[in-house]
Length: 96
Image (cartoon, rainbow, N blue to C red; front, side, top):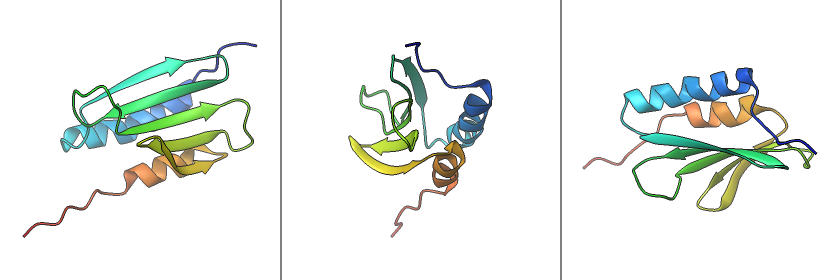
């Protein structure tokens, strides 16, 4: 079994959202890891070791893409567009 990787088109889609969130200061860094059964694109809000979001591409599951936050699945889909559209939504903060 070969190592699972993100395709160029998938990375372009993710990086489009990532660059917008970087420009607003919402996200700070990212990391990518590749394994035999899955690949993970991790998004960091600060320089902490724990990622804020993880986009996981799994070769063994029917719904191949999942969005993970705090070790819990927020969303899963068979297309990456659903995950990316969720990330495009603005983060709202309560201001007093």
